[in-house]
Image 1: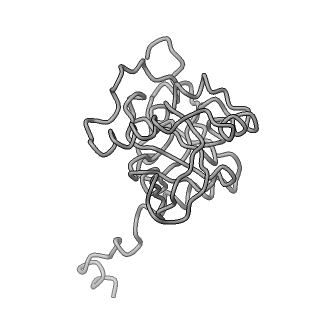
Image 2: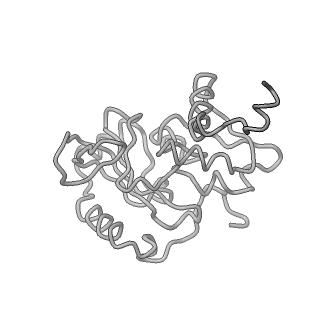
Length: 211
């Protein structure tokens, strides 16, 4: 990645994406079969002023399509449940080129982020873990939603799966820039949720001495 914007992943070879995961391979194939530039997609892109040519380098395929909310932050194409139109894209791994999940959010609710497999911690994962992001004391810009991240040209990162994101952010090599104080508190609560308070106990010997 030398000499390149650290946001940019390297060029992907055709078919390099699923770590040979059959389920993800099938899901991604179905996604590309259905990902047509429908009027709803064109309207969404125009409404949010998204540069499709740019964001495709960071999230692969994009579409607005009908999905089923399966609960627990998951979605599917054809399951039984609440159905609505959502913006759908791919999530890349830390190498910036391997698809690890498919991400969706309702066209009118960008804060309700879903994944198909529950594997993606962040969009912009490679940026979050790239030491070049933090050169000269710079911070990782965290956006409130994946849509905000897309609108910012995919600079920084955005939370997809809070539990996984909290663990991942504990390993980043630099500071995190929240959007405001409320967003900072939200990220802190998310980080705190990784550790269950009941897991932290006082050793029996120390407890006896304290008594």
